[in-house]
Length: 589
Image (cartoon, rainbow, N blue to C red; front, side, top):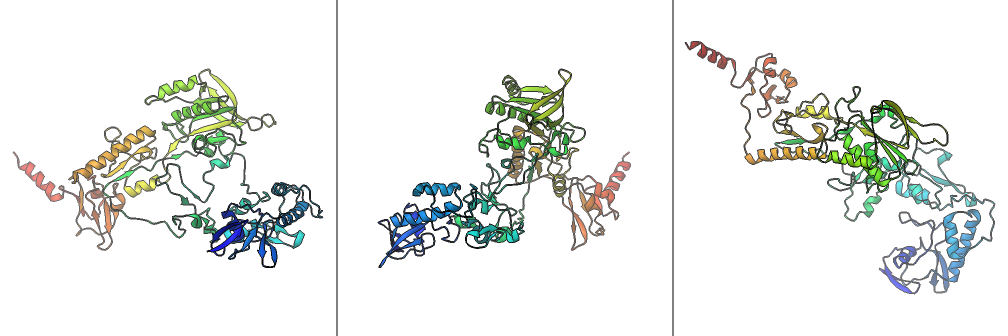
C-alpha cells in the first residue's frame, strides 16, 4: 500500500492504482470521456487532467493512465487544471458543437462558446467524438477487432476494415453500449408481424430461464455468449464474487437407477403461423397467448402494461378462441384451458386499459370448473363483448394514414345470424395445446402407448388415469392430455401418492402371467425385441440370446406367437403343461 494526498486528504491505495481510481475511492469527481473500467487506460481525451506537485513545481497529467506514487500530492480543482480542461473542451466543441455530453461538460466548466473554429465541424448531435471506446472494447474485451480507425489528426475516423461489413463482427452490441454519443446504434432487424423486442425472450447471454425456475440460478446461452464466439470477454467471471461461472463446463449425462418414473413432460403451444388467415408472424400486434402472458406479468419488461408495438395502449382488443383446436384440419380435441385464460385476458385488459373495447370470439364457452361460471359472469358485467362465431380472418384495415396499424377481424355472429367486420388494434390468439415434439421418441424410450391425439395413454381413463400400461411408469399434467392447473396438480399428487405407496410396501407384486425364453432354443434373431409393446425383452449380445424382463412383461403373448424357433412360451403355459391339463380333463368321466 502507498499513501497519496488528493485535495488535502490522505488515502492509502494499492500499488498500481491510477489517480482516477484513487480519486473515485474518495468520491472526488474527475470528468473523463475515454475512460471505461473494462478498458486499459488510454488518456486520449485529456479531460481528466490533474495537477501533480513535483519538487521543482507542478505537472499536469492525465488521471486515467498515471499510476499513484508514494507521497504523491494531487490537486483536481486548481485554476491550472480548470483552464487546461476548458481549452481541451473548446477544441472539441469547435468540431462537435451539438453533442450533449460535451455541452454538459461545458456547462460544468463554464464554457459558453469555443474560441476556435474547425474546418471539419460536425453539427450532428450524435457525432463521433473519437473517444475510441468502441474500438478498444471490440479489441480488448470482445476480442473480435471488427472495427478500427484510419488516418491521423483531425481526419481520424472509426471504420470497419476496408469500409465494408466485417465478418469478424459478432453483433454483440458492446460498441454501442459504451458509445457516449449514440453514434453507434444496435438496432435489431425488424419486420411486419414480428413481436416487439421485449417479447422475444432473454436479450443477454446469461439469464434466469423463468422467474419461477428451480433451481433459480442463471444459465449461459452458448449461441449468444461472446466468449464462445471469440474466446474473449469473461466479464461475468471477473464480477462473480462466488466464482461460480465456469465456461469450460459441458453437458453431462448422468445415469440414475430408479424404480418408478413420473412423466410430466408438459405441452407445446400450437404454431398459429400455419393458420395464415389469422396473420400471426405476418401482421403487427397479433400475439399468441404466451406473448400476452409475458406482457401482462407484473415482473415482465412492460411492468404489466398492455402496449402495442408502437408503445401505445390499444383502443380495441380481439381475443380469438380455439386457434388450432376443435378444428378438423388441425386438432379435433378441445384444449380445455383456452376459454378461461381468454376470459382472464379480457378481465386484465379491462382492468389496465379501462377505455379499451374487448371482443371475445368463441365457439362454445366451456366454463366447467369451480367458480368458472361466476368468473364468466363477472367478465360480462365488466363490459367485455362476447361474440359466438368462428373468426374467418384477420386483415389489415386499410392503407390510409388514418387506418395505419388497425386490424380488421372478419367473423360470423351466429347469435344474430350476420357477418361482421370489427376494427381492432390488437389480436390475441388462444393457441391449442399440443404434445411435445419429442413425445414419440419418449414413448418409444419408455414403451408407452399414445392416444390418437398424440398424448401419452393412461391405463384407464376413469379407473386409473395416472398409471400406464407399464408398471412403475406414471403420467401427470398435460403429458397425458390438455388440462388446467388444478387438474394437473391433482393428477400429479395422485401419481406421487401411488409411487410413495409402492415404496412404503417394500415389496412389489408382479403379474404371474408373463413370457419366458428358453435360451437353448433362442437363435438371437431379435424378432421379439422389435415386436414387444412394453420393451420388456432385451438382447444379450455376449450370449446372442434375448431375455425377458419379468417386471415389465404383461404376458400379452405377442412374442410367443412370433418366435420362429418356438423358444418363447408363456410362464405356466408351455406345451407340456397344456397337454397335461388336457389329459386331466379327458380322463374325467
